[in-house]
View 1 (cartoon, rainbow, N blue to C red):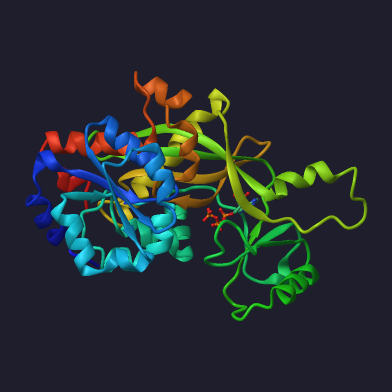
View 2 (tube, rainbow, N blue to C red; view 1 turned 90 degrees about the vertical axis):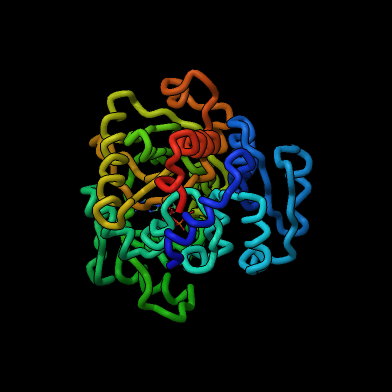
Length: 354
Ligand code: ATP
């Protein structure tokens, strides 16, 4: 793990009025760049060759650096170039996936928004579960032994990337069939989880350590293929419907019944509190809890994303919730830069950058 003192020393050497907000060109980069520009920062985007066009087209980056491979991002010379430009990096989903949580924690010696430790806590399934249990969230029922399967379950694998390869089973036989079809090399590394029936909500939170405040900025539902298309087949395919899959293809905006907001906020607050107890200083900035609300109006949580999520792209101009909190268009990307700006003003960058 990179010593936070090393990062804070680098930060101390930065020219305060030349700070550049930078991210990798993918996922939520446009939103992050726009938010940084709206807050008055210089902006930089790092693109893999072939992906730069969209960032050139929208013109939100003052500077665009091209790498041939994402691995080049980690080269000492490249990182030093970022530091020379007074760069603060903003991590997002693709950033974490392409560079890997371990490499970000151990090699990426450029100041980054948020607590690096969360990456390990969200990407390691056991840790993630411990975190959610510590936060008293209701989780889907787990099955240690496939022989015990007596309801519809979802069989999950580590690193499945957007639910690819997950399958459903409702008996031990169906489980065996699913495993055989997948030709898994490592059959031990699956998790069996009750398939919760209800409506999904993916609330987008922001925790500000400076204000000691949790904000609900927006919410979405992921649009997933082919599961979200299957219902349309009911009258067409009679005997052999295709196997459901859960590959994210888009995001739909949603607001929750107002009487559910209390539960949604409490879940977020509990996640922040648990993170502070488990890995101080805990969660900083944006995160999302993936939940399903049952017809008993109870939320079951099945995953945490401890960074900006792609569903926030719906709200570059603000959401119904962010409009209640801010009298200006406040996206999650912009909220990140606002926190950095506030920290600069209070001379407390070391509370939000690690
Ligand atoms: P990502 O990393 O993009 O979040 P992932 O590979 O970790 O994806 P999950 O988010 O765990 O996958 O699950 C993918 C989708 O499967 C969810 O968005 C949801 O639709 C469905 N899903 C996951 N767990 C459950 C569950 N216990 N009950 C019902 N549906 C579920």
